[in-house]
Image (cartoon, rainbow, N blue to C red; front, side):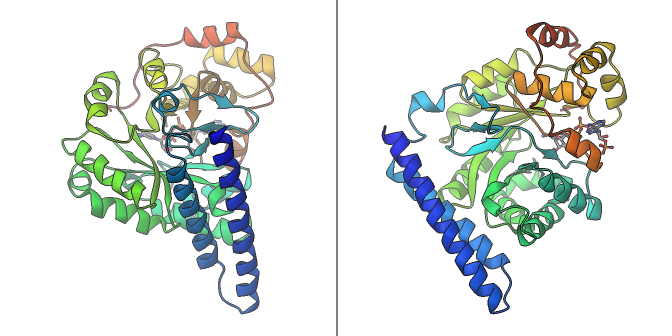
Length: 347
Ligand code: NAP
């Protein structure tokens, strides 16, 4: 009951803040100044309010041990999952690994226009500026509001994790969208615990909302988790029909941590074989959808969030159309049987 009350309170305050943001925005527009500052300020205000509420309701909203470790269920109507951090994250998004320059800005804006509300970037991709620019332009053009899009970025091993405060601030500066929804450690590293603790401080300061890990498997998690204070909300690992991680996924999910798959379509250079797989093609034909849609839907039904990468607006749109069909148990089993333990990258 307290949980529901707190959520209602948060929603009411968000509504009031959003209304204030709109009034301010229209007032500023009449005086000729830009809306960007107002929108980002409003987003920050909403976030501060949410954080204050979360603190007020601590122990009842998101932070009981039971809730933290409860397996997160996907909501196929809202197309979101509730993270153990108390924030809702979309379950399908856009990966930006190989997107740069204008192509990156255009692809992210195309995705946002098609209703994609989850964008995955990383310091190592060298495209945070373009991702941030696309989001700010989409806000200015009325396509989205800041709090409607969930942005993930990552800091890299080596010098970035050695100097985590500067690295995390660097991500925030390059993205320039007020706050970051989720910061991941890109890989395990000698300084990973130190870097994670610095991100925990950014969470306390309200600049980062949730924390996660990437390329962490069972052994690494067992060693890492006892050393940190905030349980990660997400683990992002390589997952596709030829590399399924069937032992790792339930282990992570049972900790109340959401799993997200990278290279959902096998990754560049491998998509041809995977999309042309006879089993997947046959299932696609039966549902009158594409092989890509079957693979993405298979992930979602396993409780794995998908972030396919694409610079093709038709593919970007197609990759959002995952909710008008479902795979039978038998079809899920047939795809499960394709596992070859075949990793498509070294990490
Ligand atoms: P991917 O999503 O498996 O595959 C991307 C390829 O699939 C592109 O060549 C794309 O070509 C094609 N494609 C996309 N949608 C398609 C569709 N509907 N039909 C046919 N082809 C389609 O590989 P990825 O982009 O490298 O990985 C996904 C994301 O995961 C990355 O962008 C990145 O955000 C993340 N990632 C994370 C890590 C990590 O270590 N944490 C590592 C790798 C990747 P078009 O451009 O022509 O559509």
